[in-house]
Length: 226
Ligand code: CTP
Ligand code: CA
Image (cartoon, rainbow, N blue to C red; front, side, top):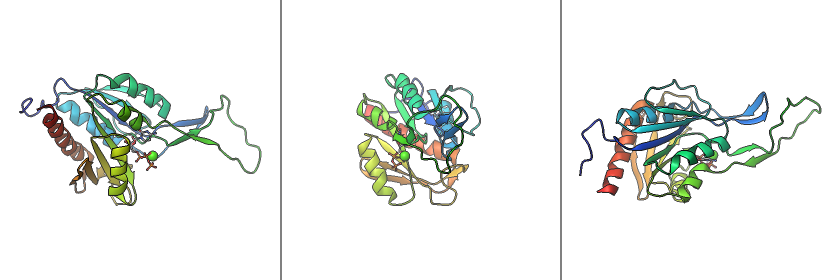
């Protein structure tokens, strides 16, 4: 049945949201990162808090504005984000992984500024740990939502990520579409569940996207508890 009145539908629930682009250091003054603004994750954290959830927002580099009513944990690298997520994972009810996590990091971060020398410089990178896959493997009742940024074959890759990372939902953005994805205030997403496409949302403000996503998520969490 219905948990709570409208507006407090996540009361008593612990929600963990990751946001922003990770920063992978080369040396004390240089790093690798990506175009993620963090806005989608911040919008989801805000929407969850407005529904009464106890929200922990684990944020890497972001241009999003701080929001009240959520616990903010700032991190830099994929490795730091992994540790922070693991610290908050066990008692979480819902985890939304909106962060753009680097797939590769420099093999080592120099502790002093790298001086220029030869005409060419080859950087050696190594794969980061997949945070979502790691927590998906140790799921104990958490409702797990991942994102997928794709330029093509959106459904194929989204479903592959859903299964590989043991997610309950995957939110796919086609980053090749105008007005979608990194650095926009708007987004165009499609929601995938184990059964395939759940819903395709039109171009919307990220805060509105967050509200609709939470409605879908809450409905499924409730159905599972019923
Ligand atoms: N993700 C993660 N840890 C990583 C890489 C990705 O937790 N090291 C998460 C992202 O936060 C996102 C989901 O996995 O929720 C999908 O990210 P995406 O970059 O689209 O997929 P990848 O599995 O990294 O595959 P690829 O980049 O090759 O498409
Ligand atoms: Ca990736």
